[in-house]
Length: 439
Image: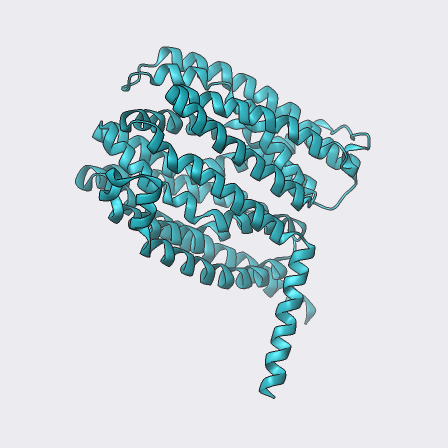
């Protein structure tokens, strides 16, 4: 009996693996892993090719640029994922995609003009920041094109092309950033980003031009449909911005309160571990979200699927984070060098925050966002952005760069707990209604 049970479990496991392979899950995992490795090499080896002061300047400039990128294309790329992943005619899907391109490009032109003017007027505390911000001001429009094409590939379940596209961008950025950083320092890093994104925009066109939806005539959207799309994009942009802005706020607060380029560089090197530890979650989300979008009205399916994903994700993330926690010293030695070995404890604190984000907050928050609860996500994120800023300022004043990690841990845990409770409640309420109707 035991042998039969074991064989039955093995058959189910093997069937699951085969199904995932057919749906392209392993293409996404492999592509995301290779892309992250390339990204890690690019980001984490930069401290070796730039002086500590230059790396601190790059951190400061990138943080300001990250704030700007939160408004990139007014979030319309998320509308591409939402409306092109739903079941429907290719003519309609192409209409949404073409409209997203037009709206996003127009929005980015205004964004570039406004930010360039602001960079020229506003005084910055670090020498060279104004120049670097001005020369990087046109990056949003190239990144918008890359992202919109990327999400179209995902929405149409072109997993292999998505993975190749994602990896190619990271690989090009890795090569160009390191080479140009050696040649021209921080300015070279900015140039490398233009080259990488421009090449990927061309590659993206080649990847999508033969898709079935690109071969039909796009259905022109009504003004009401455009407004719905824009409204959804803005809500998603606001929800995403308020979610990610916490880490940007931390960098800004550390930079403004401590006013020390070397301390800012140490903080940034330690905080980089957050991007390493979340790449598995990002790959999982890329794969699962289109399926949750297709079941947007089926709360029973959403809740049952979420419970399974929560368990699997929790086990994988715990093992992964424990490994990073144990080898934190080795990570710093390889990627940052001996001069950053003093931030081992800070790296481990950020790993605790990362584990909470990956297990309790990231999965539930993203599922809520794509299944009709984006407004709830927005409200919760706004509340916790404000709370995080208050805690962060107080903690950094008392504990320096270590206070930043503590603030992130507290806010990630509280917001993740609320998101899980809300997801459970809305799903259970609909399931209860269905069971009552069946009786």
